[in-house]
Image (cartoon, rainbow, N blue to C red; front, side):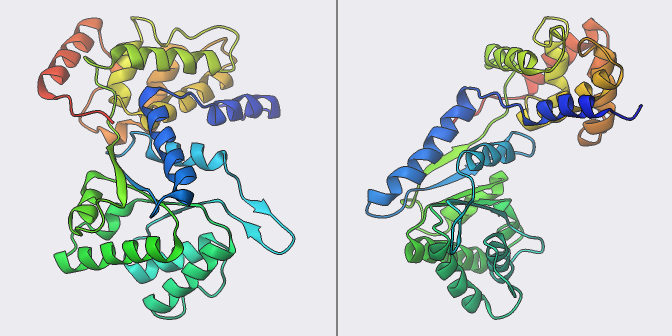
Length: 314
């Protein structure tokens, strides 16, 4: 692949920053907004738990919301209305407190006990004007943990909410839900408990197609790539398995190849190369859907619909 010019890099950058909302994504954004805005006048903060498999778009959700509420540099402090961090690995309360302190710009975060770091964290949350906290990859704190450890983590989360008066949005794999289930005082604090599901080919096909069409319109090419057409839509679905995060990765890499080739649009061979580069590792036993015959694509979709069930959407 040839080196991209500055103009080509600018076009590729527009692909990376393009955002297209869709119903279930927008619904989650609205509920996060409720947690953020309405917690100021409720008896206790309204927190939220969002679980979903890898690649469904949880990280995109965080970035999109945080982008709307950027950090602000004031005369005597950095004001951080929306704080974003991820649970580190290996995971424990002491390490998470340090990670959160680091996200707020604190120094010497590796010193002191878990209780000391937590007290510093509570003070800094107030000092930085934090109004909402995102904690991503929360499953790291509960996976393979004993019931006692999960209870300790849930008590820590409850204390952080109570002491700061700040709503928290926890995000992670489905196993993260055990945090709320283990503590009978957390369910009422986590008013919204949502499962962020991938698109389903049978039930969500039209929503998926409309989302693809809007992404196609946002791409920086002379011609539409017909991504939502009958020839490409099922192949794209199989490639990303209905997961929005995987879809973004696929289209970004395909756009890189198309721009490098000075193509007027994304072609199927660009999608095929992109799949091999960024998605094949997530499905090592699956064929490249862009290299299959129409009959094999239809057969794969039929098999997929026969083996998957529709779970409750958020």
